[in-house]
Structures are given as C-alpha cells and as structure tokens.
Length: 311
Image (cartoon, rainbow, N blue to C red; front, side):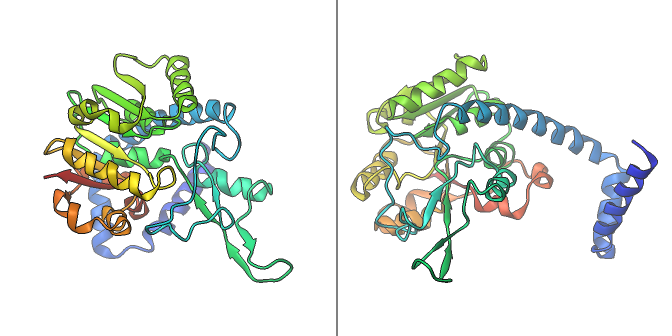
C-alpha cells in the first residue's frame, strides 16, 4: 500500500472517530490494542469468501432465468390480505435480492433497466415510488441468519427451506454454516431443476444438501425432522386459505424447541390471516445465538429476518 493510500485510510478513520464520544473511543482503543480485531478480521474475510461463492452462483442463475426473476411456470400473484395487500402488479416490481444486491439495483436504475417511480395518472407529476419485492433471501440476510441468529454449531441439525425456489437459502446454509442436512421443498419443477443444476455445477455435497419436489403439506416427516425451518414470503404464491392451512400444518408437525426463521414478523403475518389468537402462543421470539458476530451486521439487517422458537 502506498503512502498516499495509507493517508486516505487514516483520513477515513479520523472521520469516523470524530463522531464518537470519549467512552466510545476508549472501547475502540481497547478493541484494537487487545488485538481482538484480528480475530474479527479473519471472520470477516471468511464471510467475504463465502459470499463470493454465492455471488458466483447468482451470476450463473441470472443466465438461466428472465431478468424479472420470475419463471413463466410460477403462479405468483399479489396477496389479498395482510400487510402487503396494497401491493399490485402496477405499483410493484420484483427484484430478486439473491441475484441483485443494493449496489447492483442502483446500477440497474442508473442504466435505465429498472425504474424507481411510476406515474399514478399519466402525463402528470403525481408519481409514486415503486415497491421493490423479492421472493428470495438476500446474501446479506443469509449471513445474518447463519452467522448471527442461529447457533454456531449445526452439525447435527437439519435446515429446511419451505418453498426454496432458486435455492438462495440452501446455498447460504451450505456456505455459511456447518449444518449436517439442508433440505429445500419446492412445488415448482422448473425451480427444482435449477437448484439441482446449481448443486451439481458447484460440486456441493449431495449427502448434505438436497431438493424435494413436493407440496410442503405432503412432507410432514421432513418438517418434523427439521430443527430449523426457514419460511420466506408465502403469500405471493398461495391464496389466504391455503396459507392458513400451512400454518396449522406447521403447528401440528414442527417439533418443540425448533427454530423458525421468517422474512416478516409473525405478528403481522398472523394478524393478516386472522390467526393471531390461534397461533400466537405457539411460538416466542428469541435472542440471537452468536452475539460475538454482532460487529459484522448493522441495525438494518435486523429488519430482514425474525427468529422464533417453537414452544
């Protein structure tokens, strides 16, 4: 690194330090002088290496699916109940978060391939912001789930992704955890084929990761044998009644003590389905297990994933 580069680094550090009070500066000084930052740095480098694997997978998937990230064989419709009932095909746009992170989305907007706003009534200045939706878990959210929320040692545990689609959660579990068994259940055959292709192309251990082409309601044994159940947005793929049926099915078959990770608050989900009284006492929100990794995540990450334990 050149002398000029070192000066630039010092400049950025001074800018950060100038916003801190004395107590905060003391904590940073102890963190550096104790050399514990070196361990954190190694962890960060490991996260970067794993994320690079996921990014390469994303580049491969981009070549296999339409830009919109939705397959013609999928039946995706805006929900009619819940906190996303105001979403329509007019005011929303699907941008797959696994394939495109925030930086890539900004670049797509700059290139004119993606629009942030739409006209509420043509030829006027009455424009509204487009609601950007994702049916996949972002790479960042996967890190947050497996490196902060869940326990560190998952070697004897089974992770289940309900509605695995393109496999984002499966790849995250594979590269960010030591989970012994990773299972994706997906109804769409075309999505299953894409996942199988990625697993084979990237030489993943098939004894550790697999995809099941089935309706989750037909997989009570898989659900019961899973220790971590991850549920991304379901309401764009199911009508309200089927959605309620699945939650009742989960209550019946998910074993006590299992972790459940959701992309939205269960309070909001159950309220939208009119199931609050029926299911709210079935689960309880719980604290993260890897607080030592808190330094790698911002408060914004906490808004992407919620963790519960089944009572």
